[in-house]
Length: 251
Ligand code: MG
Ligand code: MG
Image (cartoon, rainbow, N blue to C red):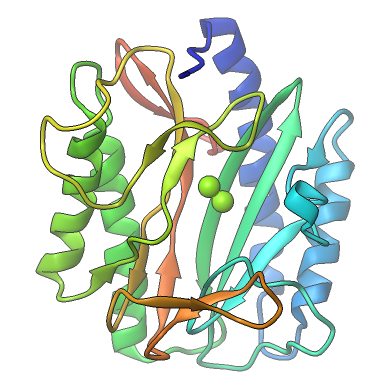
């Protein structure tokens, strides 16, 4: 069942989302060659907990051992922070963070360049970010879930990249993962109709190569099957009568 949120509940989620956005802003300058993914995770956890009432959603979720999922290069999602994973110039790194605040979760991921990256790598980041905003733009009352995925996929396909189909966005609220699923592909006017009060995480995962994925032996990290780079941009939004409202932002 889809849990619609009241305007007051959406304001609570926006407050948590601001903490999440501030967390991304806080770690960004630290994402440089030589830092480990465990050090980034420690910064994420300490910063979130410095806000009274806020906790990292992912710690312990389904047994995940850390506060952020940190995924490098061909890793798509769910990378486990480690003291042995050291960022190098030219890498890209996705930091996916959840914040629990006031009884509600918010969820936002960003892929960052490490030092100087190749122009074609930057293009992958730019296209993925653009596909996220195309999806958000389509998240309007009266549209359908399929309109969101269609808008995302169109941007990605035009750039000759592929969207990951094995992983999807999701409703978010008192639980981190709620109905409905929000795929990054779809047909216009198909799927659940969008209503005011729905809060969803839209999160295109875009591969420079093929769409196929596999899970590593750690049972968490999901990588591209062909080893090509993957990027991931995610916002939690509310669908309102006035249009989509991004909740995981400082604006
Ligand atoms: Mg996320
Ligand atoms: Mg998510």
